[in-house]
Structures are given as C-alpha cells and as structure tokens.
Length: 310
Image (cartoon, rainbow, N blue to C red):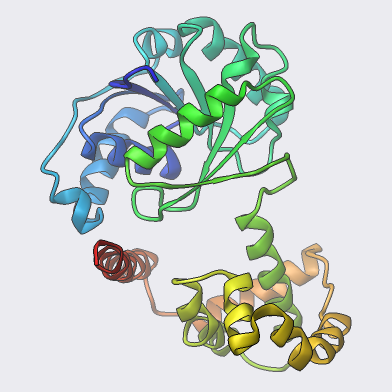
C-alpha cells in the first residue's frame, strides 16, 4: 500500500471541513479546494471550531498537519496521495467533477466520494482511471463519528477498496463495506426507516416530537451506541440466540411490521413536521445543540475506546 501523506479535500462545507479537521489531527497535510466565495476563510474558522471537539484519543496524538486552500481544483490535486470529495450532490456535476479530479491526479491515487446517494458507477463513468473511484461516505460529523461506508462501482478495483479500508482504519474510522451499491447506502436507509416511523407516530397523535425523540435516545438509542439491531435481538433471545428471539417475538414482529406507517414527505407533511419539531425545540440555539451533541459523542466514544483497550 502506497504511503498516504498529502490529502486533497474537494468541497469544504460542513462535511469537507470536518474531514479536513480529522486528517490534520492525524498529521496529514491537506490542500482543500472549493469554488464558493469565502470558502477559504470559512474552512480555517471551521477547523478551529471543530478542533476542541475531536475525540480525546485523537487529541492525545498531539499531531497537526499543514492546511492550505486553493480555489484551483487542478492545483489542489496535483500532489495528492488521497482525495476526499464532498461537493454538490447532483449526478451531472459529480460526473464532471470526478472526471477533472481523475485527470489531475496520479493514476494510483484513490478518489473517495462522501456522496450520500449518488452511485459510484455513475460517478466514475467519465474517468480515464475509473478503477480508483470509490464511495467513502461518513456520518456527520466525520471528525467524531467513526463510521465510513465504503463501496465500489462496476469498474472499481478490489485492491483500491482494500487500500481505502486500511487508510480509513488508520485514522480511527470504522469502515463498513457494501457488497453492492444501493441508494442511500446502509446507515441512511436505517435512519430513514426510523424517521418515517417517527413521523407516522407524530402524525397519528401518539406523542410529541420531543417525546418521540426521547423514546429513542433514552431507550434503544443507548443500546445502539454499543450494538446494532441483529446483535440486540440475538441477546433478546437469551441463550437460544436468534432462534429464541423468533420463538418469543415473531408474532409481535409480524404485527408491528404490518402496522408500521408509510407517510410520504409531500410539502404539506414537511410543513406540519417542521412546525412540530421547531415548537418542541424552540429557544434552544442550534450551535448550543451541536455543542451538546458533540460533547456527548466524545464521552460515548471515550468510554467505547476504554472498553476496547481493556
């Protein structure tokens, strides 16, 4: 595996800035690029804002790479050993952007996209070296949340996926490999399923938006920080494992699945849900909520890190 030193970050919004912070904290030099006016100063401000919220174990490394900004994409890519792309979520624009990145980088450089839904097969379609284009989809904020979903397109080389997995693992991420492309990947589909049922419960008058949130964060959400749905239900089956779970709860699951809601996010529903959520969290500034979220995330990650060390 080629040693990765210099990283190019393409697109420096919230996700790109968060990635940049993490790369720098692991000692990588970063050249970032974005076409938005004022993107450079905004990026430097964001990195400083994110830095104190990095996981304790990362801050303890005591590293900080050099950060440069260029509004010239080709210049930003010329010395890259790895590219993390986080730009516009539009298929035509993404295809053209990937074509330009591909043309501006060495053929052995991995090009990873943070795209939430666009397929790698589409993104790599105009590249001269499509085999090195992959999905490297993080969960927000990338400098804190360990997950990164990795997938290839029809022309991606297996060796590139392995290289990306090793790189991400080396900066503290937890890579999850998709065996095939699917819209929204894994985690966003899981989130969407829960969000849809939360809206169904809200629209049905079962509970307020705030109480529905509490039912998740103070209940299954606490377990989900430690294990996913399969292991959760395996443990619910006791010593008999999954067969024991089905013996006890198959009937309940059948009834629940048949009763789950299927609301569609039309404009009227968006307005009603927005009003309910904003009412529930009125008076809580967004930046305060973000700081509280990141503080709690750091605490959870620190506990998990100590558990893994033990």
